[in-house]
Image (cartoon, rainbow, N blue to C red; front, side, top):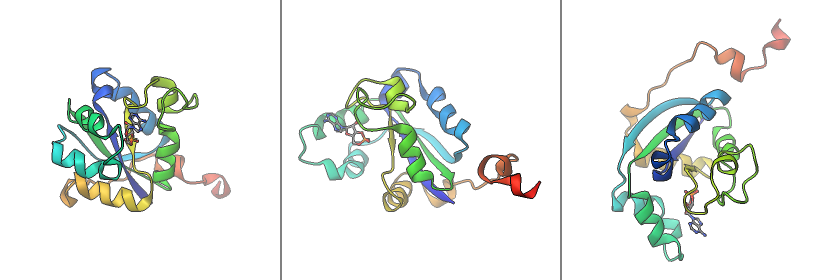
Length: 155
Ligand code: CMP
């Protein structure tokens, strides 16, 4: 099992797409184990996007991400990090393939609706950045076997 951090950005809020985007992850079988709506502070935004400091889009990105609330989720599944990245699609909406969240729902570079951790180490760091340990709620959905295992050999 693996966990990843997903952020639904201010454009997802403004465009009323929160439900639709979460639905995609739910449909696939990525299990939410934590979720909250919050307004990112400039300090938190700077920490989260620290690797982009100095790039031309850095300051506008901080302004954008702190401009309205975001919804932050921890999703769990086998290979959740890669799977969420593939579902989200490449950064630039106009180039993202159809079938991905960005490919289906946005044209923009900056306003690309969703952030998903880019590797297991950053997932761990980012989850700890947004959630206390006691905000994570482990649970087992009743359909787990049918979604994430290969039951046919057992029938
Ligand atoms: P995200 O996957 O959250 O990682 C960094 C974010 O910076 C990215 O999504 C976009 O929102 C933004 N970003 C990356 N490249 C550009 C760019 N060339 N122009 C504007 N925004 C960008």
